[in-house]
Image 1 (cartoon, rainbow over the protein chains, first blue to last red):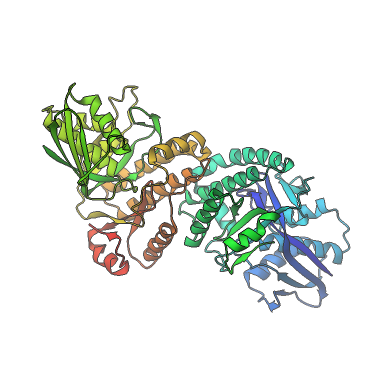
Image 2: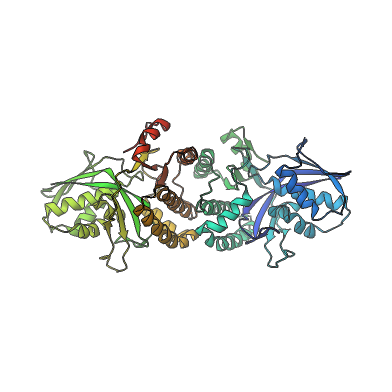
Length: 304
Length: 304
């Protein structure tokens, strides 16, 4: 069996867990699904598990294999072995949310292979246990992840928002496809444990989220863009306040932010968000795409 | 008469006022004086004020003249006019603390010209009213500015710390001498008024300050450096959380931070701090200076 799940990019970020094991977040978050993602093929296998990533066999002891097998072990029948083939359309572990689409696609494939017939809501709760933001990659469009309050995580799931806005687009501006110097799991823990700025985060999210939902309903594009930038910058700010500081930005990241702001001053409606990595995600309306392609003629720009 | 005051660079930053008019801060701060600064010459003049900056006559309506005259008006005898010649050894308004040394030198010159014979403590209170951090530029070495609690600011002054550490050095790594896109006075206001991250700042300063004093007493260089970086990054982080966001960093700033961190990984003991501008201030011991000059062969590097 084979299943596809989209990459999702958060407009309101998920940063900080209340439970490490179950990936239970401290706050809600809100994302937008890209038209690219991960395709995972799953088949039964004899004797042992086999894991490939983008066609390349992954060693038993690799971090990638371990994380997948660990997840699959929680849900598969005893004494079953699997061949898991993961194909990412976007680079792995460069802050481009490949683990989200990966665990979502794997969950969907398991649902088929094991004939679970579970609802997207239930699958969202399962995918979350592989990678928190994977729960959002079960759906397309705008998606909210409800943090929940139960200790077992059974009320921590994602659901699509009832918003139709086909002109809304996000693109990728990639400066590095290298693995991150510190993975987001560790970076979250370090932020929550050591950054005094984290105390303000739950209120920032609550405020940004309320404004974001309203702006999405109204299709108020500039408001959506401003809140997204504010939320992303606040997340990166918190990390910089950690000990030791966490700075995902490269010189290209900062130059790109300034470039986005300069474009806006000239009337081009483009905004950005950033995740745990140096790359920018551009936020724009479909009509602006040709202009961006002309004004930002970079080889590493992927506009959808 | 002529007076010199040193540039001071804060190791624990001053950011946020409780009184805009009197420049009364929300927190204490702690600085180190550089061996460069501002020399201000003052003489009586007939009919009207004359202001020069680095030898160039400044117009009556220029922001520079207005700010100086406004300050001088608070303290000079009625119907006296002045020629004020300011010479900065470092660029004006590029986050290099020229207003601090400028108002300190002007205060010292007024003390002489008007024969006030006031103590450094009293002069610190006067200089503060020109530019908050000017109160710290009355002294050399390590200086703490006590925020005070009175409404009239009479207990908000700076004093030198009793720490002798001649091997301790700070240098400048300058990427832009252009005027800042937003001056620190406005940036402070915008941060306090709109950044949810500011709520954590008073506690960050209290904690960093206690650790910094102890580290200075012990001449614990790496501890001083780490706290200084943490404090500077926290200040910039708060600004990024403002609406609209404030980002003084240029691509060169971020590249330089990474370079400092890379150097430390190879055993070179160098740290940085940053103020309201894109430039870095390097923190190092005298013995490391030749190494830095070799490893960072930049024309815009000034090591003392």
